[in-house]
Length: 318
Image (cartoon, rainbow, N blue to C red):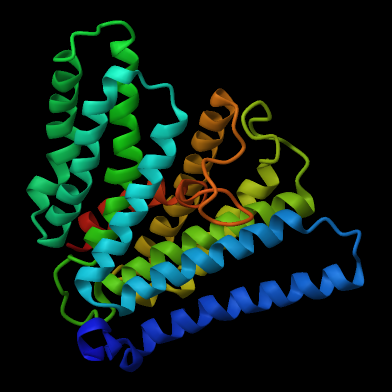
């Protein structure tokens, strides 16, 4: 029974086991450090760092679990992330009452998208939402006969589906990539690489910004984002990526480029969602993760880094 639920072969894969231990080691170190600093200097403002670390405990546990559980359960787990993120985002946006049927079909698209990823049908997977649902959802909205605000509903619903389902589903498709001779880590290694670098980028950009940030990038959108934090995060993330390149089938230069792309796209995903939250006047998209908002507040960067990473690796190695 246990063998059917778990994929314990990762214990014998030194690369994957090393990264799993590294991720939890960093989280334990960070949590311990913040506790000690907070105890010695109660006046230190560590609330945001603690919240980010706690949220990444949840996210890291989820994604690491996805690498060791049954293949089917891993897809279901990541699919549930898309489901919750989609629900969080559409619920705070201004949809019309007549849009409910179209929203229902958008929900139906989630298991279909993940099933296409599960069976590895790349051709259908890559066009189902960007082409199929792009054409279908406007038709469903038109059938209700309410044209007031229909352009906003068409564009908003499609964007929500692309961000929370299409983007995030690339993490699941990593697990369906074919085996490459001499590359033992496979899709699980690629998933760990992506999640770890996205996590490190999030923490490093925040940390460098707090330590040295003086020059703001886009103060009207995200006043805490600085050039110092952005550059420090990009350099740190690219450096970590270099040392974790063994989790990918890429050459050294390809790993450096992909790591750089993860850092930049993660930053973009973060500020895009910040602009959305400012527009609708909310601090968090939900309360799924105690202390740091909803699921979408934590995977906003992944919604950008996942498709960028997937397609770069797919082009370079597959």
